[in-house]
Amino acid sequence: MSHPDADKENDRKRGTAEHDHLFRVKPLMETIRHACKTIYHPRRNLAVDERTVACKANTGMTQYMKAKPTKWGFKLFVLADSSNGYTMDFSVYTGKNNFPTGHGLSYDAVTSLLDSNVLGSGDNRKNCPRNAENSLSKKSARGSIRWIRDGPLVFVKWMDTQEVSVCSTIHSAYTGDTVQRRVKSQGTWRTKTFPCPAPVSAYNQHMGGVDLSDQLLQYYTAQHKTMKWYRKIFLHFLDIAATNTFIVHKELYGNLSHKEFMEQLIAELCGVSQKTAPKRTSSDHVPVPGADLISDARNVATAGRRICVHCKAVHVSCCCFGCPLSVLDFSLDCFLVLYITHCCLGGVEDLSSVPTTS
Image (cartoon, rainbow, N blue to C red):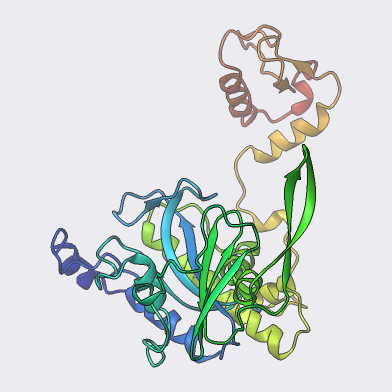
């Protein structure tokens, strides 16, 4: 991912503006980002949203997000195709200085992921209409719509439970779309239909692109427990690459399920044919001294199993000759007793001589 000597040089800059928090993963990250944008042309509807990679490492980049299912982790801003969840581009949030344009985090996160050729051709919050004439108020009825048009740009306000503002260059203000909401009327809850602006309907339909991408990533993730923060990021890059590859394969051929595709991908990366892959047997494992004796003891000690009188949960299969501990009245921690029992079994050659009454 990066050269160890270069890592040391970057670490010496820690605490200064020249220090790069993502230096260890930057080369691979740029390679993955370039590949994501090169091999796939997205459809019309894209979504930008946050993604969390679970991690509690003390790196200065991990964020605590109280409202998220994953409370601690790295925050990524992701651009995804809403039709299939393909990850088009992403950026890792490293702190407040990540986007230093001065327009705010939301603005910088979105514009950093969009094609620079189309930036500046839309609108921004500074130029939104703010005149009070015919505007919505807190007392406006639910479903009320106000809109104003400037050439191809339409700006719409809609009253749901709160005021919703949206602008678009490709929609009409209202095309007859409706939404259903549960409202309380005369002490009972009922479902009622309200008019909804076309841009809001389109937003609700296509806003879940990153959520769909997150769902596909989690099905067959490579993530596992690790003590290094950059391995968490590295494994997430693997998930992005594998999931994007599956999406492209599905678009072109569509003849494999996600599981079948991942199995075939792993077999090809390992240089093993799926059809001739050997079945895993017990002989494939490294032998552990005494493990076969413990296994045999569990098999023969199926009758007369007794329960610890203290914890009422641990089942004891056997004990050793001359053991001072009573199996019916443990004076030590039950886990310790079971551990001692298994250790002693490692030296027993004739299991027939081991009592199995308790």
